[in-house]
Length: 91
Image (cartoon, rainbow, N blue to C red; front, side, top):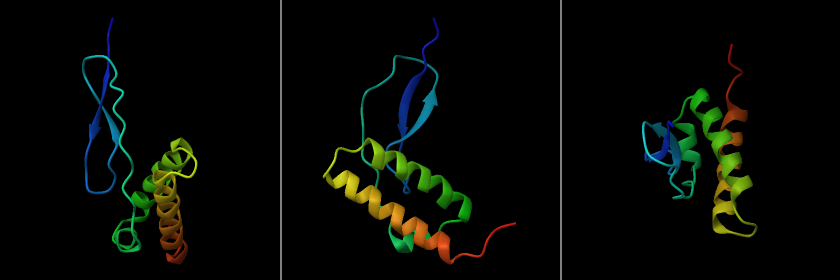
């Protein structure tokens, strides 16, 4: 039987992004998403922002109600959407 283990790729954009490695059972470790500031959103490409928006929405949906994680995810969504709104549409 082939097992794939989920490991956490840690970068400066988002803590808790999942990446696949080759072996072992799934891990259950969870980490919270880092708040995406307006400054950080402005420094990202449109493609990166669209990816982060999806991650923030998933983090919001997965976070417990009234938790700090949920508030951070919502603030990230707002910051990303505000930045996307001021950019010209891509081709």
